[in-house]
Image 1 (spheres, helix red, strand yellow):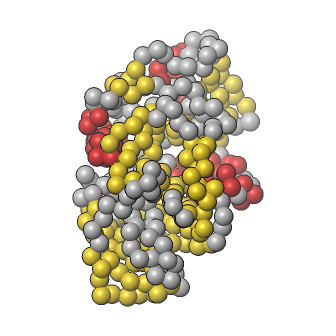
Image 2: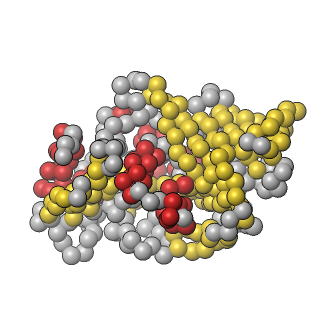
Image 3: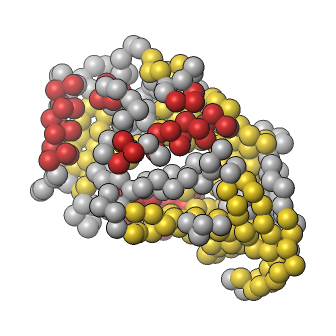
Length: 334
């Protein structure tokens, strides 16, 4: 089994940092766990840099695998989108990152998040190959996009995302978008569509929506039109959402109960996210914003995928550590 020098160095550093912890190698997995009985890391707090520097972000306790969830609504329809992002790898080569997103559309609440998470919870029979699932999980992590609940709480939008070592939760206005309806029609994915444009959080977007699906929903934070958004692209042609499937499926629209989530205003979350990922230092050090990041690692699993690559999971799999970086392309500038 071969690992990069970075990976080997990290494993050895973790083993030293964990003191009495143990390194177990077998079945393609390396599992490093802290030796104390509490499972907690340290007693202090990490001060977050950047726009939310005033926020004292507590180190979250070890996340229970059976996380409690609150049901907010039930879906009427479930839409799957392919999100793609044109960018560059660490060597400057042009590449396109992609990630499948699921949009659960309910009577009151919509949720847009990772399709892989959705399958794992509601359609596990479609996740037959665990190694393939890990490969997709690692690939998905190159995409920086939060989980979004629309109209939760009522009239608001809630987003959650992990920026190691914390889960952050931000609240903004529901569909705070001033749309310009265009005199342009097209057929997209079998639906008759109309076009619309907007300026949203510092970027220009053009979308196509269909009134054949009577909902104001759309992928990510986009929505508020008289029909489902089936396609969206920013003016630079970098970010794109494209509908893949649409089904009438009833599934719970849930939100995990996360008492340790750090709550911030939406603008501060956008500024902080951009300060972390858009900093040139990120391409060489994904933890550049967090001195002594090792002290916040509760546990680590290194899984060998079917393709032979390694997936490094930190803190019960809540964070995927990448061995190389891609240039960050923000969805929001402000």
